[in-house]
Length: 226
Image (cartoon, rainbow, N blue to C red):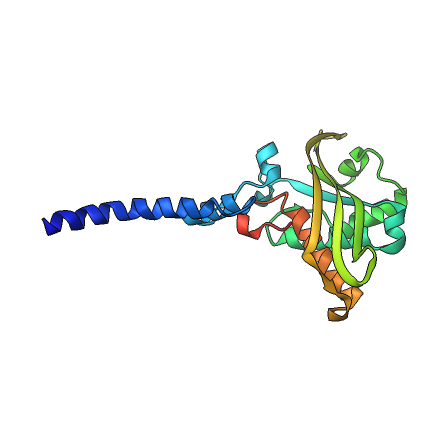
């Protein structure tokens, strides 16, 4: 009889643990619920990038080349004149570690200096024989907290558009992927005295570039940068 009860307890224990775990998850707010549940039952596997999910293309195989362009309105450029170059350079370095073939940002910048405008990107695709062109449109960017001059918090928002370039002699571009982005770092403002504004801006640019890069490669949920 004792052996029978022991067997029953061993059989019920995993089910009981599952019920308790599910009950606990009911008290976890927001998207953390799905993340915690996934980790608890399936570990922390890589999920498809938003770009691969939409297009079926895995850029980390290195078969297709990517050209990145970043633009920002004059109001932002007046305060952060190098932001376009900073974002592209950081993304290029980060994506290189993921084996994504990114066309040299220096070469693209030289092309822009010679032409003065991006146009419809077809000419740019022809010049560099790019398979995809990623256009990052920064609509908002700040590192200061409004009405709180002693606090720092980075916020940027905008739109990402990836165009596929097709053709041999003359390429044409078509939109294959489009998303908005909204990055805040850190989650709560920090006192200005903890870090100079220049160092803080550098850290925030790294954060923003990584978040934008994650549209393009598979990564774990715990690695997602918001």
